[in-house]
Amino acid sequence: AVVVAMPSPAPDASSVTRTKGGGPGLELYVNGADGPLRAENGVRLGEGDQIQLKYAASGRKHLMVVSVDGRGSVSPLYASQRGVSLAVEPAGVHVLEGSIILDDATGPEHIIGLFSDTPLEYEQVRQAAQDALQRSGASAHLPDLDLAREDVIETRVMIMKE
Image 1 (cartoon, rainbow, N blue to C red):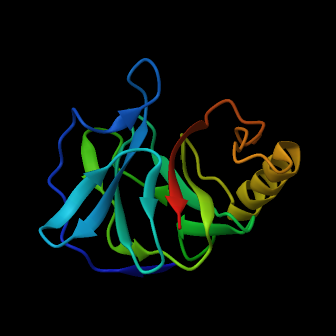
Image 2 (tube, rainbow, N blue to C red; image 1 turned 45 degrees about the vertical axis):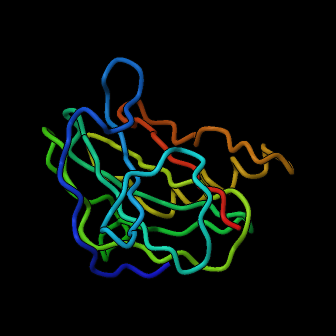
């Protein structure tokens, strides 16, 4: 995945997919001919499509976004250069800078947002994602990541890559 510039979708607090009870959430946009368009969970996309994310942290101060693709590869999409969560705005709806150009991996791709009070280490997240992949077997369903931390709220958006 490559992060590139894309016109930002306008923030709209009512449209971000959140966890039950109004907690943190992610929303997916796909760059179309008329600019970024909101995409539903399970949207079908392909190699070269360009996506962007909005988030609502609902009081959390850090966010890491990773991708788990159809090949079982775990990739950091939004993390610091040091491999830890990004500091984010805890209130409101915000657009993550840049966008992601999808690669050629086919099948389900889970884009997982991990909101927390303190930073997460990418290596711990990668290992938890690998463990979840092992628990899922050949199933397209990816279980929640087990990070053994009370302050982490996991949200996700799934795309089907063709």
